[in-house]
Image 1: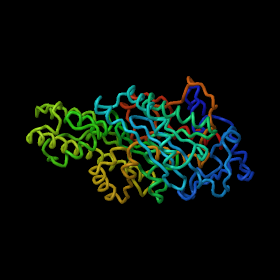
Image 2 (image 1 turned 180 degrees about the vertical axis):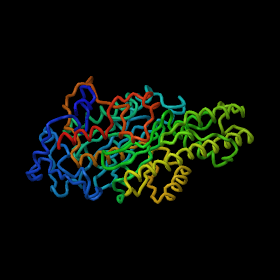
Image 3 (image 1 turned 180 degrees about the horizontal axis):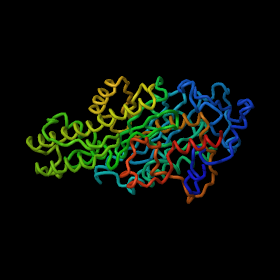
Image 4 (image 1 turned 135 degrees about the horizontal axis):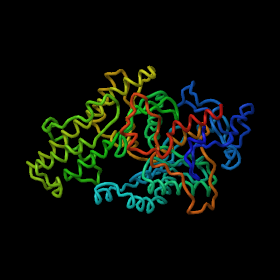
Length: 476
């Protein structure tokens, strides 16, 4: 039953029309879509493969969508290419907003970093991060609108990350998005953070069509997926403990590096001075023949190596002696070699699995903050090329958390009718919001299931893929 898949929560934030609402869209198939108040064109335009399963009557448009959102006056044949969407991202430690056209044009991109907080606390402190978001969210959004030279009344919709992420941080972005949506009568699209990292590659590479593989790597996530269509994902592997970005950050902290530029770039730069073979770290999970990741053990190995060299993290790298600096650089280089080798081995197996599922796959997308690392890109490009695929990496500014990826994902879903009507303009401040801190992207591939991880991780929400599949089944 569809109702059993939907979280029991008095939700008011966008469920992307996954709730078992009456669908008006299916009954309108016999009518001309030009009669809709939206003049909404169902097709996905040039970025969508012509045989996409979502270019059909299974797309959802709830009854309330017909009268609530502001009407569009554009020609119905061009409206899907004239969308202008504001994207808001506050899932972790960066406050970001952007305005993007459905043609792929980025009108603006604004990011407010919390680098000073990261350096002060040695990582993300949720309560401090929430307060930092709250202090700058209004200005970040206004700057994005100003730089795009648009007003709220020019927008087609608002897209906002609703999960996964830190609840306290997600709340700030969602509240801001709902305020804009309600005040200006705009549709609202709830976005999955990891899907946004994967789909932003379709903005920068217009030839990238489904199906494709994606490796999403950041401070909080390691995820290998097969993207079969928009909202249709198979999870090939994920982390059973710590993500690679977390390992980079902790290594940087223990080596006394400057965290204001984040741990990843700091370790990458120092590693260039070191001998990657000097410290014999073991590659994680060699005995596990799956595609899951583990970086907790490697972190422990790094900490022990640092202790054995008597490195004092209180002494910054800039003040270290030449011998001390050499020891630190050797550890950084050895850590990076093994951390990336773990990625390579998992990707090798994932490519094998994915091609078994769908031999037509041509691309591996690598996105997320760690995808900015040049060593990671070079090594994965070798793996991908060896297996006859092509590597696609968004530019570094679109790999880290940003509003562009949220806006673009909002555009992709809006095109197929997945959005919700605006909330009341006078919505109460204590309204219960649908925040999804733990929200799987896809269902696990049978060969890649990890019982240990399943026991450790409580799935608060059904996966995005299962919700979409349930809603499509309901409409058929």
